[in-house]
Amino acid sequence: MSRLPAAQRREQLLDVAAELFSVRGYAGATTAQIAKEAGITEPIIYRHFKSKRDLFVALIERTGRQTLEQWEHDLDGVDDPGARLTKIIDENPMVSESGRKGYRVLLQSISEVEDPLIHKAVSDHMTRLHAFIVREIERAQAAHKVTNRFSATVIAWVLVNVGMGYGVLTAMNVPGHGFDASGVHVKDVLGRILVGREHHSEKRIGPDSQNNEEFERGEEGTGH
Image (tube, rainbow, N blue to C red; front, side, top):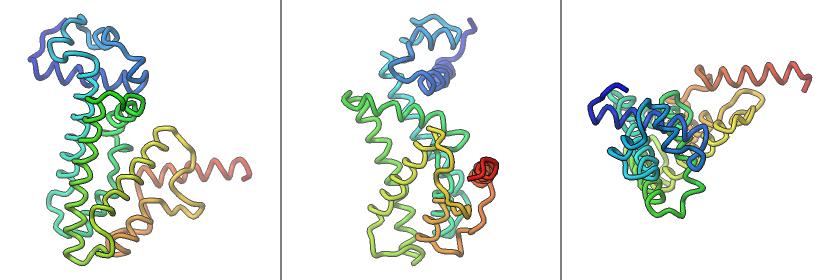
């Protein structure tokens, strides 16, 4: 068992816990399993976290921080409010390579919302993400890139709700969700409604378009 600095050990435990929680669920993963996967004895976990619940909450909090840091990074140097909003629409952390696992852990909280500590962590997480999006929408509205007919608050909630729904269906591996037979994606619709053609290309290139093509080839192969 190698010794690690406290901060590094804490991050390692969070990484291992995220892997186990995302596969086995909050109830199914134990601190004994986490310790085994981390290559440590179980008491070491309790030097960093009071309980499995505290470890779970710390994961939710870390996922939120990482999402905001990633958005800040993606928006660095992008001045146009419409382009900034388009980037947020395109970069759903629930399906990104870096964020997918953390959000699968967060989804485990659905069965734990009666726990006040977990409920607060999830609520704070969503509140911070929503506030970030609100600021970007207000910026776009001030630049006349997004309609002022609806408040930035409710538009931001639309994006959060659609993004969460899309993320859940992706996590469930629902085939063909999110796009139609012509290849138009949910992100394209949101982008066109909010910021128009100028900032949101009709032709999408990336993981989503590849998934669409794979699904469409599968449909052709079955004769549907």
